[in-house]
Each structure stands twice: as structure tokens, then as C-alpha cells.
Image (cartoon, rainbow, N blue to C red; front, side, top):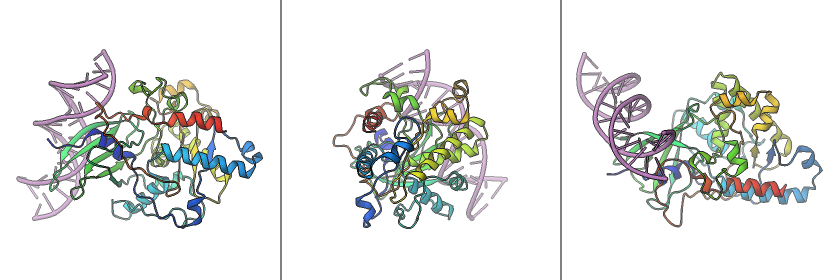
Length: 340
DNA sequence: CGCTTTTGACCCGCGC
DNA sequence: GCGCGGGTCAAAAGCG
């Protein structure tokens, strides 16, 4: 039987297209702007910080983030959405990496909203047949598989396991390139597991249970979150949007000379702003109790080696649960906490 | 026991 | 209207 291995499918989600050419000065000094709404660097601290030290710190943050985040970037998404909106559905990832867009685009919910219905497709190059291990950090449940006409490879259909999230993706192997996966995302995530982010998955040592998986959102999800929130007319999701906007605004204030943007928003802040209660959050089936650490990154800034390559083929997971507990996301948060 | 995957059936849109 | 193809549903089975 021919079907995609789970590791490939999972890996495909996080793999990103080749980075745009890094031929400008920004590439060497690329960094992320780190906006934290909870515990990291406050605006006051940032302002008081020496620029040299801050740059060093940002550089470290950039590296850390680039290490852990390999999902589509905000520009990836915007570009893809624009492209699909124009009639196609194949993403052109070689978009400008900020050079042609003067102000760093954090994420503009409104912009994404207008394009929400579109899908975007990523072509993912994997290393070998089963080596792809990169993940997008979300938990997907496979709900169908179809053999496609004129294609020897079946197409798998995945849906986000969050009942309130309508994100879907389709994964199929390219017919002409055996090591290329075509991943089509449809709908976007509006959730994030806060506890995972802060507590390191709760289980510890990568042995955490499936429910303790970290779900760091790709930039796509971050952008989409706002859009999805808008689509959803439920109050808590609109509150989520407000939170996201707030975070984005904070990033704008940080600095503007570079293209990188790393944005984190925490549910705590979100609750502070919105005034909703924990009970409210719980009622949202995880959408609101989830944190909204929005990780928004401009492409091509740090080595986006997203190769879904793995030196050793990993055993095929028994489920589609993304093994983020193996990924150092929460470790990085601890590191970042120390840095700041 | 709960969750996920598998897989055949069903539904729906589109072209002829 | 009919057939085809793609997308989804849902029951059954598998797994930890």
C-alpha cells in the first residue's frame, strides 16, 4: 500500500520553502523583535537597555527562535494568500523578504481577514523518503485519504484536533519529485496551549503525554488566528483578536530597522486586557485558555533550514500528534527567560 | 478507555 | 441528467 508516512506528513507542515536570497545587509544582522506581553522584556526595560547589549540579546533570540520555529513566516502567508487570491494556489515563496515592504509587517488582522477563504500551498522538500520530521506544532487528526486521479500518491486530509479550530491541511507527495510534499493549508489556527509553552509540556523530558504537547503556532497560524477570530463571532475569539492586535502594536514600537519580528503574546496579558475570566476561558474549549504566543517572523532572516531532515529516520509515530515535546520550544522559553 | 488512523461510503460540485 | 473526481463522514480497528 502506498501512503505517506506519518513522519513525512507531520514534517511537511513545518517545512518552509527555500528562503529568499539574502543579499542585503539585513540578512547578516537579521534579528527578531521580541515582544513579550507577559514576563520577558518590558518596553521600559527595552528602552533602558543598551543598544549593544540588546542587539546581542536579540541576536541570541533570533538564533533560538530560528532553531525552534520553522513554520511558514508571516510573509509566507501573506504572499501565499495574495497569490492564491490572484487565482493560483501554488505559493511563490520567493517573496520579498521585507526589502520591498518598507515597514515590517507585523500582522494585520484586517489584511489577513480579507483573504481568509483562500488556501495556500507549500511545496516541501523532504530529505529522503521518511526523514522529514519537521512539524508545524499543531495537532492534526487525519480524517481521510484519497487517491487522486493521475497521481500515484494518495492525498491525506488532516484537521486540527481542536474542536473549535477549523484549520485543515492536505498533504500529498509530488508526482514528479518523490521527496517533495505538497501541503495545502486551509483555514487557520486560533489556539495555543499556554501551559505547554511555559511549563515545558508538563510531563517533562519529552515524555509528556499527548495532551501536554506544545503547540507553537507558525506565523501562518498567528496571522490566521486574527482572521479566524474575526470570522468567529464569538466574544472570546474577538478578545483573542484584540490581544493579538495589542501584541502586534507592541512590536511596531520596538524597532523598525530590521525585518525580523518575533512576537509573543500571553494569555495572561490577554485576560488582563479583555477582562474575561478563567471560566470564560475554559468554556472556549481551549481556544482562550490557550495562550497566543504569536511568533511572527520575516523570512530569510535566519537560516531557515527547515529541512524536515532528520539524521536518523524516526520511528513512525502512532498518531499525528506533533511531537513538540521533543522540540525545544519550551526549553527555549526557559532560556529566553534567563536571557532577559 | 480515550484518541487516532484506516477506509469504504456518501455528498457535492463541475463538466459534458 | 449523468458520470467523474475531490472532499468529508463515520464505523471499525489499532494503539498506548
